[in-house]
Image (cartoon, rainbow, N blue to C red; front, side, top):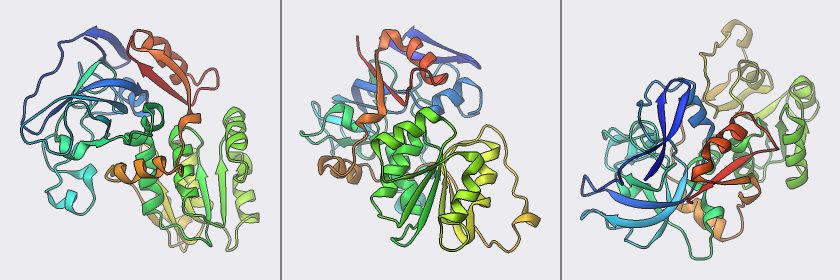
Length: 345
């Protein structure tokens, strides 16, 4: 089968690999019907993910049909349409039982697919710990509607949940890329008083303006002044940083009011500095980490009910054999791309 793989730093390639087989009784084999490219894949390509194993098939955002299950898999069966969670987790360790599935202590726990073991930019994928890692797609929900559930939509839902957003809050979201917009959608579910989106790209600001007209928009250069003028207590009550640059990290805490929550959703290429002398007296709470993707069933129910719709984000579609071109467009942010769908030939 064809599999898009991490060869070495700076190089991915479409190669032939054997179709995966069941290894453990908790495994499932899924025929991938649609996958997507994530910014984390680009981080792997650039060598920014030390855990990534050379030779691994990349891709951790996918939907498909279950082909085969191990004897211990009870939650799905052959023929089920499923979303695949970005994280594999046992459901039994201390971290899983407390909802911190990104920190699962199982050898395959956390972000394994497309990083440490073969992922989904291919035709078939082996999913370990399938009882937790797969969710059945309701009949009324299309593959396109469900594609982002296991990763960027799970990330947005997690970020909104841990940010403790109330209806009187002013919420600032920094970054309107795919994860930023998914975060916006999940913040909107909580009905805060104001939502401000900060984005440097005019093209992406236009996308937000077209699809979410009630959201306030601002550029990074004007953000701090704008937030101060459009908040009640000298800054945003909640800041969600989804852009991932040195400038946006600083902007996040500068735009927060005293005693605010700043949630770091972005993945950074470089270490960030907390200038504590400058921050003294702001009494901020920072929340950080990777997505805990344990809300996928709830997210699917929200999609089924018409309360979440990420289909406008999938702006481009390519065949698996065309994946090099898909990466070129996505990585270089060409042609108004937000997300790309990859389908079998």
